[in-house]
Image (cartoon, rainbow, N blue to C red; front, side, top):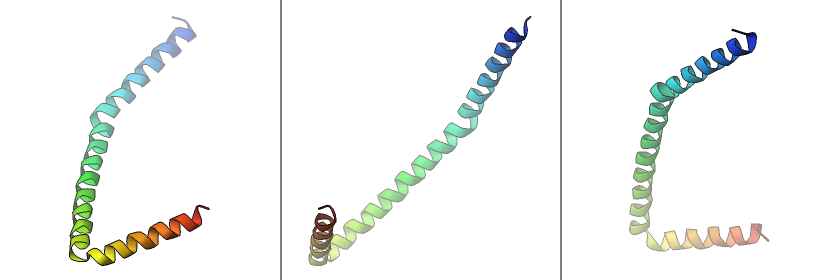
Length: 75
């Protein structure tokens, strides 16, 4: 085997190790983090909805103020 062939084989083995690590460790951790983020945003969205239902006029006022400020800043 030449040095070139040895290097190619080492790269192939390293690539396989990285793929195996991604499949066994990284992908499950990312999936778990995505599930936790989805659950958290769902809880927060429900909390905001409850506040809007409890105080609709305040919610409209806040939305109007934010819209006004965004409109002023984007000019």
